[in-house]
Image (cartoon, rainbow, N blue to C red; front, side, top):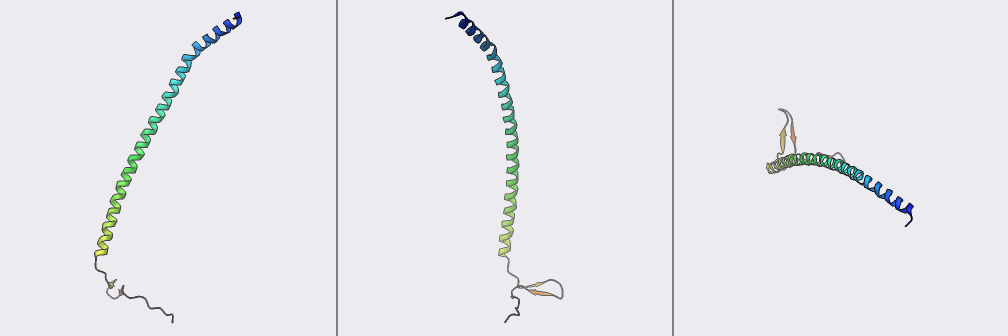
Length: 101
């Protein structure tokens, strides 16, 4: 093997020995930044999930109340005459008369 190839190989090995720790440190810093970002995303998603669960519980309560009110309204007897004031009565059972022949 010629002398210049041995010198080139030696220089290449020295560069690799110096650059490898620098690459490892850079990689570790990038991984830490990614881990921090992932942790922030996780916290944000957990908070959003908590908000969604609260909204869902509230929605379930409201729909249960609506269903209960609806079933109670359906069980009431139907009224045919409703008194709006002392002088006016509206008959809810009759259809309005149409003027067409």
